[in-house]
Every structure is written in C-alpha cells, then in structure tokens.
Length: 140
Image (tube, rainbow, N blue to C red; front, side):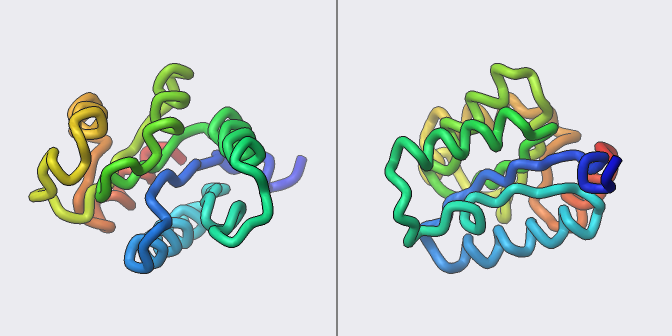
C-alpha cells in the first residue's frame, strides 16, 4: 500500500477569484501537506485559465469532494464553496472551518453561508492558522 493511499484527503474550499485568497489557499494547502494530509485545492487542479467546460469543472470538483475524508472551508467571501459544502454536509463528512477574521459579518458571506458557519461546531472553527493546525491534527 502506498503512503498517499493512507493519507486522509482534505478538500480545500475557498474563493479563488482574488489574489489574497489564492495566497491563503496555497498556505492552507502547504499546512495540510505538512500535517500529512493529501489536500485537494481546486485552484491547482482546475486553474482559472482552464479550458475545461463548466460541466467538467463541476464534475471534477464533485469527484474530489466525494473522495475526500473532510473539508477545510474558508468563510471569507460570499459564494465560496456553497455547492461543495452542501455536498459534503449531506455525505455527513467532517467540515473544518476557517475565517481569517472573526469580525467578518453575515453581510460579507450571505445568509446561507453564515448559517453554514453557525452550523459547524465551535471546536471545528478557527480564525487563526495556529488554531486551525490544532484542529486538523485531531483528524490525523
């Protein structure tokens, strides 16, 4: 059995449309790798300049979500990962949540994503990378 097969898969769900979030996403990807996870980051797998059709992108992300053991979701911008969130929530898989600023209010996320944030247990949420690392280590 290969080492990669034994690694838990983490789907990183975040907006990719702005440079600051792309950098954060890469930082989260590296954090997951360093902790021994097999992370899936859509911006690396399906870059913005891809020639894939919208349907191919959707199906690629669906397969990645379905094969993941847990999701790391960034709650910093409206519209980030709501389809993926719903899919993994229905599958009853673990969702770990990160919000770079605790002060981000529901208007910045939209009501549905704010509801998703509120649904996630407090022990699975962090607004610091150090706190996120502690949470992720529990799932090793």
